[in-house]
Image 1 (cartoon, rainbow, N blue to C red):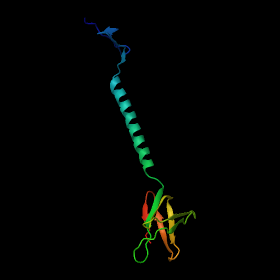
Image 2 (image 1 turned 90 degrees about the horizontal axis):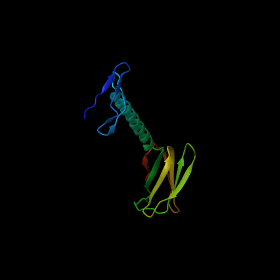
Image 3 (image 1 turned 180 degrees about the vertical axis):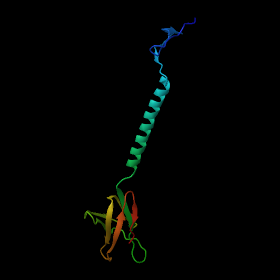
Image 4 (image 1 turned 120 degrees about the vertical axis):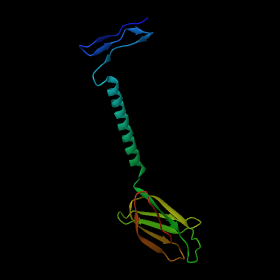
Length: 146
């Protein structure tokens, strides 16, 4: 069964028959720019804006304002010095963190705020040492061996 489509040009509406092949249809706005093209570009624009927003915000979270200082503590013969006290001082804020070297003489201080640092070591029976002028920037990993 073929039904007729009536086009009313006075108000730019296309009126489809109420039932065609069991499917319900309603009228579509028929402007010169095309309803489907405007809808497509609106949706595409919104998707692009969302993708750009998510991309920018995820890259902002990728960088942190923290870093780490690590190193080895050895004696003059190259032997590890376990249990040495490492004192890390932020020279801008005077914040101090103290840690001990492990059994291999290795130490790591993580989650340090960016800034300028001084690192000192001390161990009974050994001469202490200090490293100055260490500049820790975002996501950096500095090495201060003694």
